[in-house]
Image (cartoon, rainbow, N blue to C red; front, side, top):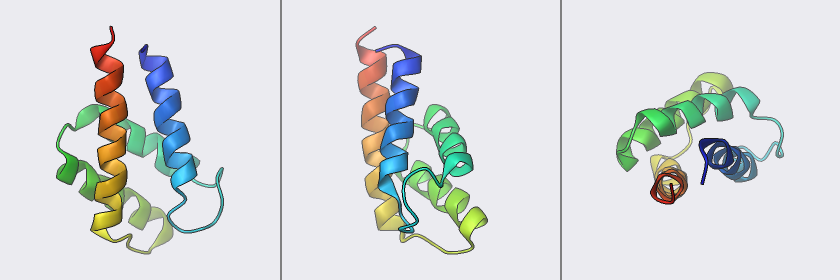
Length: 86
């Protein structure tokens, strides 16, 4: 999978996640920052903490770390599957 395809799948996955129930399409900044974090980090717990802080900064509300850990696992799986098929 090319990096562009991987990024599109990461964006789609994060957009569908909708942790605050505001509907898909309302997290553009957070998604961009989270996709960058996926490329920077390989540790699921560190990525979960980063995602939690990104969304908390924008929405001034904390997403439970367990929820962030779940999405970070999916995102890392997408990233790792993308890099393995080259």
